[in-house]
Amino acid sequence: MIFRFESPWLLSLLLLLPVLAAWPVLAKKWSRPSGLRYANVKLVAKPTRSWRIALRPVLTALRILAMALIVVAVARPQTGQAREVIKGEGVDIALALDISGSMASLDFEPQNRLEAAKDVIAGFVQGRPYDPVGLVVFASDAFSQSPPTTDHNVLLRLLERSKLATDLGIDDGTAIGMGLANAGNMLKDSAAKSKVVILLTDGVNNAGQIDPLTAAEAAEALGIRVYTIGMGRPGQVPVPVVDAFGREQIMVQESQLDEATLQEIATITGGRYFRAEDTAGLNELSAEIDSLEKSQVEVEPITRYRELMGWLLLPALGLVLSEAFLRKTLFRKLP
Image (tube, rainbow, N blue to C red; front, side, top):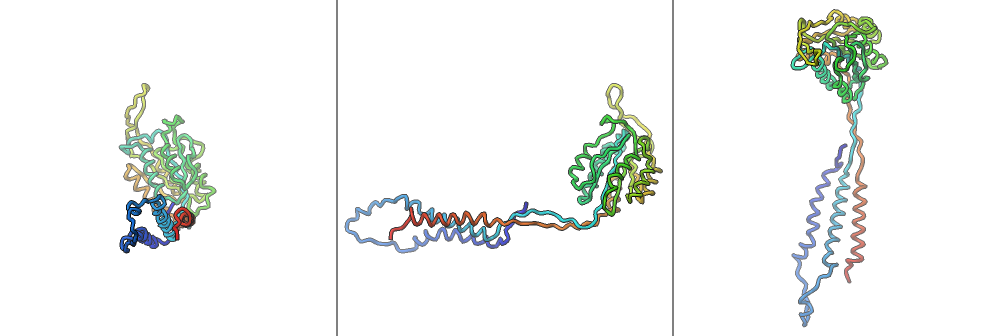
């Protein structure tokens, strides 16, 4: 909501109102006092002041208040509702995020892989306010968290609630083909000229009914580019494991990442493959993908204003009529 005056310079007339209010007092002070010749001065020694005389300044107050309302009304107060008209072509994006148990690995200290990925994805989404973005998570199967939307606040809340498969109590695994197919299905009906899937995983496809390369060929047929990101350092990495007594321990496991498949997915669809071994590298890759897929969007702000003059003129008219009525009745001067 926006509030403004169309002609704010007219408000300077309000500075004259204190002068008009003080004028009767000043005029009385500067004028010569009237005299009365009368023999018996006892009759005027203790003059009484009626309530009508005491309240007569109310008439001046009503008139000054009415003038103030009229001045403010003439300055044309307005309220407006701002909105944005978006012209041009945006980019429709679907994010496919691996939530398998291996994403708990701690080589992105102080966070695990999943939390580091969520932070970087959130920054990427916030930097593209006019692009529809959807979210798919996958472990042994794929799940649509959010269809492509420009309501990024909702999307970011759903992203924040995404947890590891082991924490959600679902079967663990890495169904890369299912995640890619689900993300591609989100964009198949999109009319955008540029459609992009960003696939982020740290493992090898070992679950699901769809092969990753088959899903890549389907995405290519739909005109979807796929950028793949492989997470994790090669070799052995620390992973938190809960033992039979419910105690969490840190164990060292071999990091497995099928880079060849991820590279082929990107090649088939005309995208690119990236490797991220730490949080800094992941941030750099996010910025690079952001620069590769630029939206051709032009934002035109439009504000519609509503006049409030009437809300001031009606009370001003009421005060003027009240002042005239009181002046002719209760505060009427005798000729």
